[in-house]
Length: 324
Image (tube, rainbow, N blue to C red; front, side, top):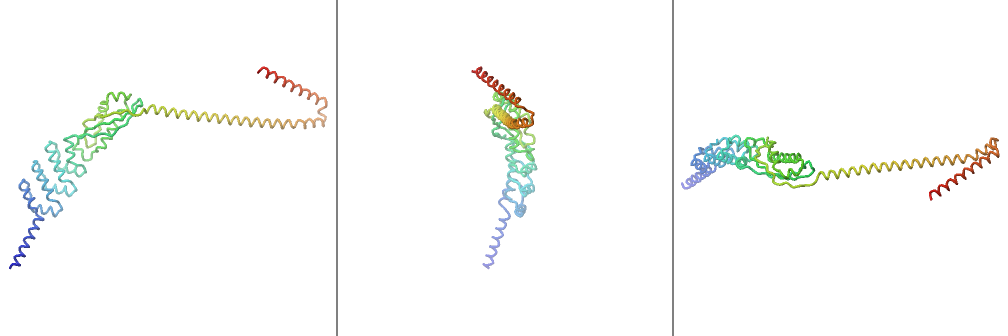
C-alpha cells in the first residue's frame, strides 16, 4: 500500500513538472491580469512551434498597456520570419505616443529589411546630426578650400524600406559642397558667406530616394588649403621649359650633324683635289711625249703660277697689316 502511494505521488510530481515545463502558468496569469486574452493551450502550442511564449506575451502586454491591440498570430509569424518582436513593439508604442502613423505591417517590413525600426522612430522624433568628413574643393581662383559640414536629418518612415542610407546622404552633401565651392569666383566669397553653400546644397533635393529628410546643412569649418592654380602654372612652366630645352637640343644636334656632314664633304673635295693635282704631272708628261706641250709653254705656265703665288702672298701680308 505504501509502495502504491509512493508511485502515485511520484507520478503526480512528474505530471506537475511536465505541466510547469510546457504550460507556463505564471506567464498565463500575468497576461490574464493585464487584460491580454490568451489560454494555456495556446502557450503550449507556442512551445511546440519553437516560439518563446514570454517574448510574445510580453510584447502583447506592452502594446495593451499603450492602447494598441496586436494579433498573436501576426507576432508569431514575424518571429518565425526572423524578426525582432520586442523592437517592433517598442517602435509601435513610441510611434503611438509621438502621433506618428506607423502600421504594424510597415513596422515589421522595416524590421525584416534589416533596419532598427525602434531607432528609426526615435530619429523621426529626435533628428540626428551627422558630421561629414573633410570635403576638399577648389574655387575658380585656384585656391583650395577644406570644408566640414553638419547635416541634420530626420528618418522618413515611409521610405525606410528601399531608401538609401547615411552614406548616400553624406556623399550627396559632399558633392554639393564641391560644386558650390567650384562655382565661386573667389575663395574669399566662400569664406565671407559660407551660408551660401548651405542654401545652394539644400535646394538640390539631396534627400530624394533616401530614408532620411534633410532638415539643415550647416558649414562647421572652412580651412584654406594649397594654391592649386599656382602649382598648376608652375608645373606648366616647368613642362614648357623642358619642351624648349628638348627642341634646343634637337636643333643643336641637327647643327652638329650638319657641320660634320659639311666637314666630310670638304674633306672629300680636298681628297679629290689632291688626287687631281697628283694627276697633273702625269698629264704634263703625257703632253710632252705627244708634243702637245712645249718647253716654252711649260715655262710660261710656271711663270704664271709663280706670279699668282706672289700676288697671293702680298695680298695676305697687306690684310695682316690692316688687321693689326
